[in-house]
Amino acid sequence: MSDKLMSANESKLDKVLAEARDYKASREKGYREQALKLYPWVCGRCTREFTHKNLSELTVHHRDHNHDNNPSDGTNWELLCLYCHDNEHSRFEELIRYGSTKEAKQQAATFNPFADLKAMMKK
Image (cartoon, rainbow, N blue to C red; front, side):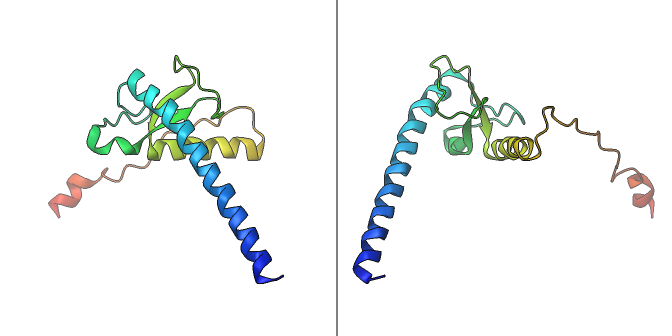
């Protein structure tokens, strides 16, 4: 392939990627601004609170996982911190990948690392 043709293809790809990033940013700005006005700045899962200083770590999650479903009343949104948002999407991807129609129930943790702490402290 000639250098000229490769350069033209790279230029087209760069343009398409830039347009996609701009579209995503403009779409997110609209519903993010609305969600931050509607809801308190608290993660819906871990209840971490946010201020102007760390607000960039609070994301808008689409409950139905459709980023184009943005009703103005916010019924498809919930505010999640970066970590809880990543976890939610990982769980959804596993649900899709493995085809389960019901979510697995989490087992309660049984290990207690501090069970013998008092005895260890006496030693």
